[in-house]
Length: 420
Ligand code: ADP
Image: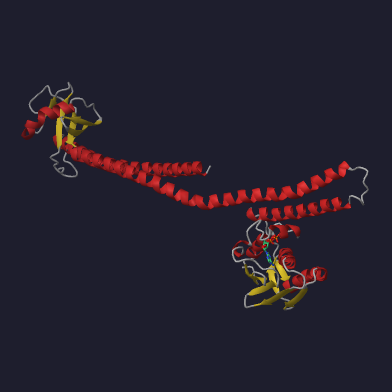
């Protein structure tokens, strides 16, 4: 799939470049060609015009034209005969006369003749009563100007081959560079796609186990219709537990999916973080006794920051829940919160089982669980810390973890007071 996209992207890039190149070089070629021939045409027209004015006994306004030895003037009579009015150039008349013979009145031609390129133009003579020299039968109808344009056509031909060569070299470079750049651009897209695929497969895998639990327990209950609810209470209990687990999993998946799609916006408002922590600690008080843990709190009162209250509550629940889950009876959990110059610093520390150094960099990964059996037993799905990290980063803060196996773990969060 990616190879196909890569090819399409390269082809599209190259095509766009090719079109720009063709348009650009066509404009340059067209402009140079127009300018070159325009100059020649003007010179031919001006020479023919001056001749006409002189021979028509009208004094030219601009004086005598600049004599261009490349331009050759011929006269054509009303009956189609061609003569050379410049006797000092008679040697050239033969060939030039042949070149001029095909031109029609008012036409412009560029034609090749015996290895040379000529520009030929025909102008009306305009003086009807004019007979050339002593020849009373040669009534002049047209002036034909012929100019050799070898240097202009050679320049154009050189320009053509240079642009063609440059175009081919540029095209090869663009295809190679386009392929290389597209490949580089695809790396993060491919990584994100693979991550998403992994997420979907992990999620389906995680959803399968509670569904299997619910289905098998319900099936077993159906096999004994005579059993009372009391007799089946352990199965009903398992179904309820698995349903709860599935609800939690779906809600976590939804949060992460929304975060991926950038659809989970924060409801920002001034929040008293000290009160949020106190509230979460209050809800864990009963757990303290059940788990035989000591929960101590050192939170500076009335610390305020601009944040999403619900998300901060969720963040504290995730961290405290983990601290309780992974700290054996008799252990301690400590929460602290204070403010520095521009940040609120929250830390949750426990004296639990700790995290091994090789697992430490992976704890924020989705579906990562250090001890799968233990985590699952305590209702863990491996998404808590991924959500915690997203919440902190969405608040433009940072989350870090320090841990020592067998001694305990400390999560530290730093969130800016103003969300700017
Ligand atoms: P889970 O639902 O498995 O707890 P989390 O994303 O919250 O998922 O945590 C990921 C993993 O990080 C856990 O499975 C556990 O191995 C490790 N972990 C998280 N918090 C602690 C802690 N306080 N002490 C020890 N290990 C922890």
